[in-house]
Image 1 (cartoon, rainbow, N blue to C red):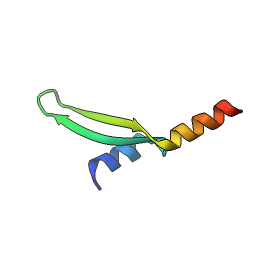
Image 2: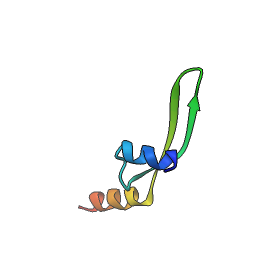
Image 3: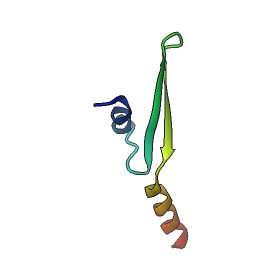
Image 4: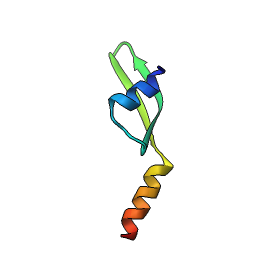
Length: 51
């Protein structure tokens, strides 16, 4: 499993968010994770606003 998919599942992001990039900074001992919103999120938000 690729790391982006693994963190997608570990963080329970669901369909509204997608991990697009990751970086490990060894010196600082941290992982940086870039997350983007998906079209699914936009559709859900639009539906909520219409209610």
